[in-house]
Length: 395
Image 1 (tube, rainbow, N blue to C red):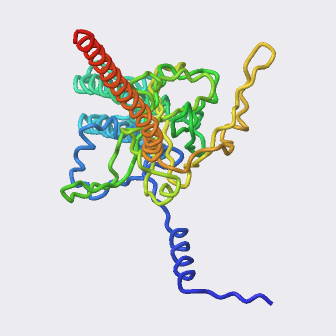
Image 2: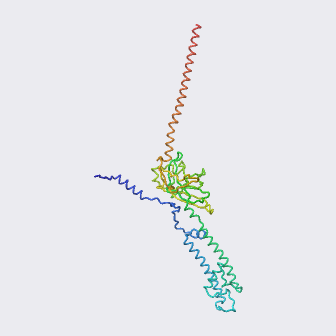
């Protein structure tokens, strides 16, 4: 029999592990690109009415269609009521069927017929059964007003529907991001990478990519800034952020001293509460409208020591993209240290070499100096011996 003994330290470890497993990072931007932010306690609601066109376009389709139907129905009813009031005040209702009476509108015998005449006037249908006569100046003025206002209503509502239909939001559905981001070595430098792709044959014109780090911070003065946004350089200065998105591309961020990941190691990464928001923008080739696709990565979706599986292969006369492997990664040999620690280790590795070279140069200079001094002393001794010999010979 195997006996298991649970120590207090093990109990505490299991408790914290379960707490960390339960803890869930709240996303700022969801994987589908929708922002997880709700605006509450907005008191200045009149501002929405000052830009009524954008407000109608931003509404959901069911409310938009309801407003579309209600606007036309109310307009027809309003002018139908006015046509009926004109006929009633002129006494046309009392002379229905009287051939000697000239009404304002022929064959208008009630509110229903006035409503139908209002629809015919505003929609310019003109069936010909109900017509306005020249003996009704107030009717002629109302006809002009309804025609002008009807054109304005048509332009506003049809324009609103057209803009809502032509919005490029659905185009972003075919712009895909990799499920995970990876951190590995590239050209001897630690890099954060993710992959983007376009599923359509019609391309995104002037595509550009941006990345933001969403992380709360506290300033030196003690001010707490929730969800602080920090730029992540993905090639802004080199032009690598401008994409030719014909096939899937791997976007790379070099982790250097300006990077917010400079001091983050593999062991520290799961402890961080951060989110990387990536934004792909460009113009739709078919319509010329600007399109934006978004996604995000939290710490659990950042894989340390992995690379993306290649998806592009050369076939007979063309290149083929295998989107089955678009999200796949494979493990690679990557240091577990942060970029800062790697830089310090590299600098320490270079210092002994520098010291040895300088020390050898100094030793060589000292040896040369000592040799010169010895040669000088030997020369002096020789000169002294020669002088003594000459003196002895003279004596």
